[in-house]
Length: 44
Image (cartoon, rainbow, N blue to C red; front, side):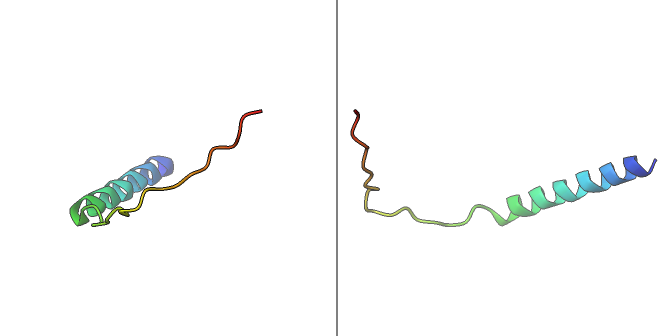
């Protein structure tokens, strides 16, 4: 019975966290205008 209560509490906390993050919305970030320059190693 104790395990069932612990599982229900954890599920409720996880659901509350998800709903809180959803209510806050995604952070307004901006992408960099410069392209990401990467180098590919030479193949043998």
